[in-house]
Image (cartoon, rainbow, N blue to C red; front, top):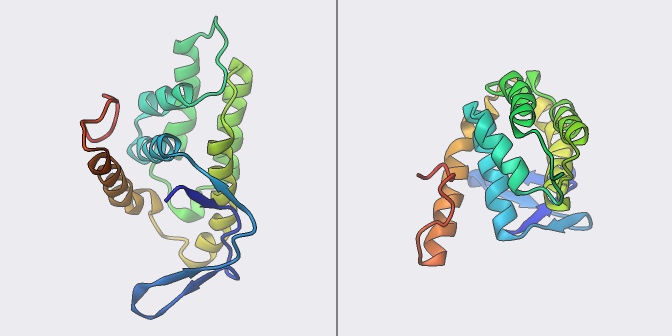
Length: 172
């Protein structure tokens, strides 16, 4: 919905009867514009699908700054190394801090500067990760997230009343 809750832990997330969830304490939230939210979801989909080229392309598209002499092939190869290592891991074997640290290191080494929207989404995942690892360590969260990502992408395109302008979307 465009708001990233950056403090989703057991005290702020309550499971209710009927599969409903109540989220409270919106003291640490960040706005995420529609385009950034869609591209973050598509980045996660690329990660879950092992599509390192798409992950690298999205990382560059959403960067705040890219050096003029960026070696895109080397950048993509470095992103591929991170994505291939992380893709398909279950909750107990995946650490957001490790993944994010490796991605930030790739960006730093290549002089690519990320956006705050992506950083805040990662902060929220780091906090949420601890609860998931405790409650459902065998959860294949990457696979389980794919339908939600696709549904949210489809809803966004339906609201725009026009065709997607990005040929790299997983919907193509």
